[in-house]
Amino acid sequence: MSSDRETLKAAFLAANGFGDARREPLGGDASTRAYERLHRGDQSFIFMDQPPALESVVCPPGASDAERVALGYNAAARLAAGSVAAFVATAAYLRGRGLSAPAILAHDVEAGLAVLEDLGDGLYATLIAEGQEEAPLYETAVDVQAALHAETPPDVLTADGGVAWPLLTYDALALKIATDTFLEWWPKFSGLAPFSAEAVAEWDALWAPVWVRGEAGASVFTHRDFHAQNLLWLPDRQGVARVGLLDFQDALRAHPAWDLTHLLQDARRDVSPELEQAMLDRYLTARPGVDRAAFTADYRALAASNAARILGRVFARQALLGRPQYEAYMPRTWRYLERNLQDPAMAGLKAWFDQHVPSEFRR
Image 1 (cartoon, helix red, strand yellow):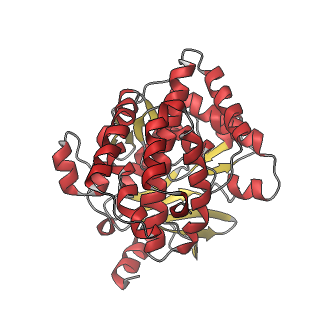
Image 2 (image 1 turned 60 degrees about the vertical axis):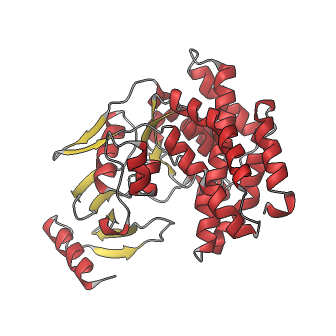
């Protein structure tokens, strides 16, 4: 860490009443953010550090497809680039819905710093691994989804202090850019030969209807990374507030199936087909106006697209960047992808993978 950045952080903490707090570094993830736990007396808080210069620019509202591609991956895929403004505004929106995003106790969005409420360490993934029954946790997470989807989100999310962040749409370009990372990164990782121009053209033609359907159905607030390592169990709270929400700064307006694909086809832990189906049934029961057959078809197609994105952009890329721990998640993600491709409507894509990514290159 540069001394200038540390000086900035210390000054921010001092200016906001946390200068005397004991700072405990916390483990990081695949992002450019860093976290610390602040201890002050018998209280604890979370200190978020997102150096703005470490990410490429975000998508300006109204940018054309060509402009987004030229600006880089974050703009094309409509990622927030770790923006603290996005986190603060999204937290305010979620808390305004009665959901348990952390309270923001201090922030400097230009510097990329914030102090948050500490929601504890009760991650879904940890609790389930320790033996807690998973069904009640998943039921409440699905109820969060149904509650969020019951209203139309605004075009701009706002928070106190003049913070605002646009809630853009997870459109066909963003879906394409993300899914196409499989084409770039999987051959590099697996040793497969680069895909031919003909294979890429066929890929585009097969996926295009999925991406179009994803954009057409984009109508609800979407966390975008809604899975067991970003959800905390808060048993002292009531109803949907028992689910603590983390890592939501990349939120968009998207298809209502999107967050459910992350939750129920979790790349980092096994979710049985039986639990997946029970939770889809719970969600659809809570939203009786949703066409069940159409929703299920979109869910399978978008889940397949998401699995391809994860295998490419997240796991293969991270493994090649020197993080081999991501290789452990690959077989599970392939199983999810193959399960989705069993849908007769996905027969063309199944044939593409069978031809161009033989089983010995799936690991």
